Figure 1 (cartoon, rainbow, N blue to C red):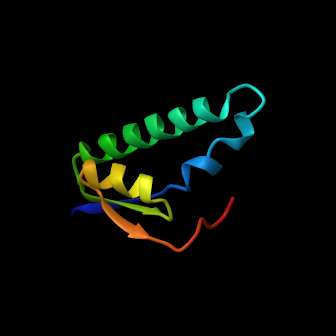
Figure 2 (cartoon, rainbow, N blue to C red):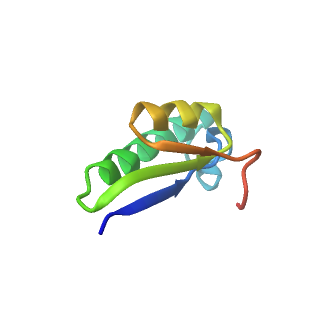
Figure 3 (cartoon, helix red, strand yellow):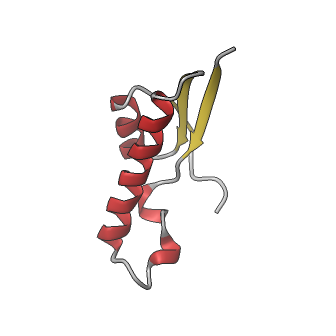
Length: 81
């Protein structure tokens, strides 16, 4: 049986805000994209996972996900915290 992995990713400007005391906005942004890319690549290479879907409101995240071979499910705005 093959499974799908669904990865919710908020917009990069809102990501990693708890690290604001130790990382600049640009460092948090770079960390966000590095982690997002690592997760998507790892899931795409995992046996038994047929497809990776990324849920996001961000056009930047959409472009990254599509470039890495994931399906994108767009939402109108970031949900949750």
